[in-house]
Length: 184
Image 1 (cartoon, helix red, strand yellow):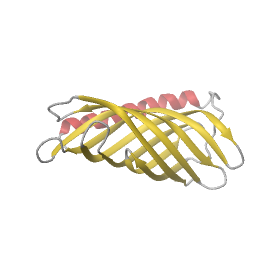
Image 2 (cartoon, rainbow, N blue to C red; image 1 turned 180 degrees about the vertical axis):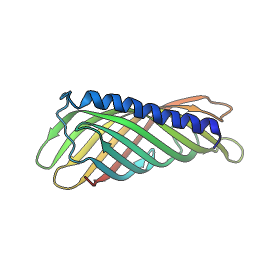
Image 3 (spheres, rainbow, N blue to C red; image 1 turned 120 degrees about the horizontal axis):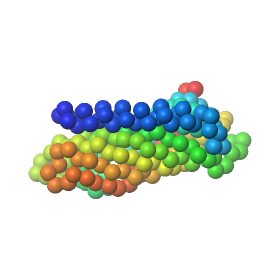
Image 4 (cartoon, rainbow, N blue to C red; image 1 turned 120 degrees about the vertical axis):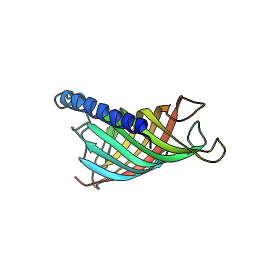
């Protein structure tokens, strides 16, 4: 990895964390959401775009960091596959239903991603990288009696490519489903 994409990835992570700290200060006393998480930290798997490991850390009863490391392959506008890292700040503005079995919160967020991939559109494989802005939205089935949740999300992504000679930007949607085990 060259220094330019690495520096951009580190800058993106710092900006996301800086925005998260400010949002966390605003959200604790807000009381605007009717959702309260059943856990603080969960880890699991995510399938789709991307596929890999997923984690979620609640910062308040209704705000969380969502992160993942995995593989993004044959994505929405490119015949390419490679390592994908992301970090999102999520808000859970409303629980669509609550019953003794589960809660069903809607979530929306903003975050960033780094993608290091092999581009198969050129002769041989060309190693490229991209930074992306992510806007995920989805639903989580947060079970009350077992430490699990199942989520489904659709994420709008705008990518900035570093080494690609043809494209500088790309936009599209990624979709995934996953399950997490809650430790706390």
